[in-house]
Image 1 (cartoon, rainbow, N blue to C red):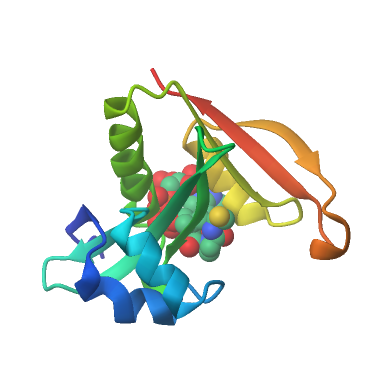
Image 2 (image 1 turned 45 degrees about the horizontal axis):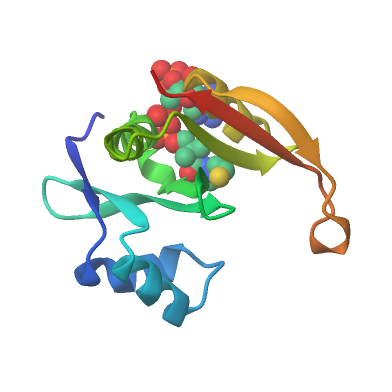
Amino acid sequence: MQHRTKILIAADRHFDWLSNHDTHLSRDRIRQLIALQAYLVAETEDGQTVGFLRFNRIWGTLPFMELIMVVPSFRRQNIGSRLLQGWETMMRQADEKVIVSSSFANEKVPQAWHRAQGFTEAGTLALGSFQREREVFFLKELR
Ligand SMILES: CC(C)(COP(=O)(O)OP(=O)(O)OC[C@H]1O[C@@H](n2cnc3c(N)ncnc32)[C@H](O)[C@@H]1OP(=O)(O)O)[C@@H](O)C(=O)NCCC(=O)NCCS
């Protein structure tokens, strides 16, 4: 079933949902990132939050998508694509030319998703004791 969703910059009212779903970060950090407008969320017509995209900038400049997640029961309905499109629009408005993202090198779904969005593989990093798997980086030129 297709759901109509809107994409918006996360606000304080999304804090509880983000705290429950962005499990990598502390609650304090999530609060800071909401204030910095570093999250986009996808919301259904009836106000349910069903996905988020968190971004940052490598070296303080290069736009980097840190994490995108769509709630499992809402996947494959274009919501991840729409979150990315929302972020791309923001980055174009900021006059950015390139965006970067990454995923575990051994996970097929995020790689298929990145390729479907027009990202190309830019190389992998071995991250030592931080992470067992290599991380694969993706790059997309914004046109
Ligand atoms: C990756 C993720 C965000 C994709 O979100 P989504 O809303 O399901 O993706 P979309 O519906 O926008 O998919 C767009 C296209 O990507 C590709 N794709 C998406 N999921 C796929 C899958 N499971 N297998 C193969 N291709 C897939 C397809 O080409 C798809 O188009 P189609 O459905 O018309 O075939 C979602 O699977 C997710 O939350 N995964 C867990 C978290 C994660 O791995 N995040 C990425 C690392 S940062």
